[in-house]
Amino acid sequence: MRTFFDCVPCSIRQVLDSVRMVTNDDTMHERVLRELLGMWQAMDMRQSPPAMAQKIHRYLRQLTGVADPYLDVKNHYNAFALGLYPELRERVENSPDPFETAVRLAIAGNIIDFGVNSNVEQSTVHDAILRSLTEPIDHDAVQSLRRAIDQADDILFLGDNTGEIVLDRLLIERMPRDRITYVVRGHPILNDALLEDARTVGLTDLVEVMDNGSDAPGTIPETCSDVFRRRFEQADLIIAKGQGNYESLSETRRPVFFLLRPKCAVLARHLNCELGRLVVLRSGTDPAST
Image 1 (tube, rainbow, N blue to C red):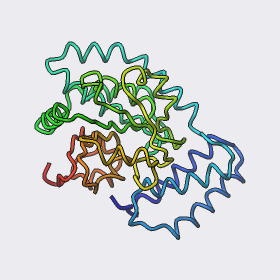
Image 2: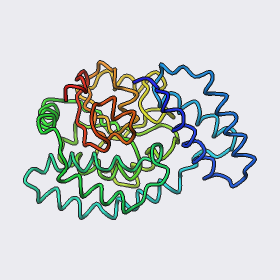
Image 3: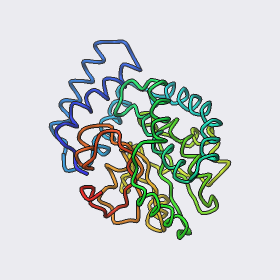
């Protein structure tokens, strides 16, 4: 998915949010803003938004000397989601269709995204999770995902954000765990999950977990490690969570099921659906036909 004009102001807001987490120095804020505006003049907007963000946040980390501006936010939302986990697991187990319920909750967790939303309130997350249990979803797509999981011997599950990865556990627990490798980012970027986050929320106790070697807020294979690229090419099935993974892999020819909520108007238009919709979409499917 290419970068659209409306992605530019979002990128500027995102970087200002990041630098304000690091320092209250207005001089530094101005310097970052001016440098960012200059960088955008040279950007190739045929690339995906995560490719743009990767370049911009590398510069931000270099300038500020802070490797992980969102560390406190990530720790907070991992703990928050872990607190919800027992209740949500019970809801899954007691539902008429535990697999579909787990899919709904895993997608609902995608609201914990500080790349798109500069201020994600706990109450907002909790309300979104509860609404997801009754919101519309493509039941045929869910069944198609279920069949693909049953038939696959090697499944890559591409994670997205901290906090959200706790809700991914609910879905992984309904899948053949011996066939799953869960993938996190290789280096800090926004509030995206790293290997340490996977350990914190217990994913490493359930399935194999690897990082992709990249600092992009999505999955851009050419910027990932050789080890990840081999696994990506060999997998029978790839499950990709979140907006960044969709933006960076929407044109892939690999067998991917995207699970996400569109959280901005640009992506909602691209998917031909309303904001916040629970989306289950197979790669190669025209969004306009769903």
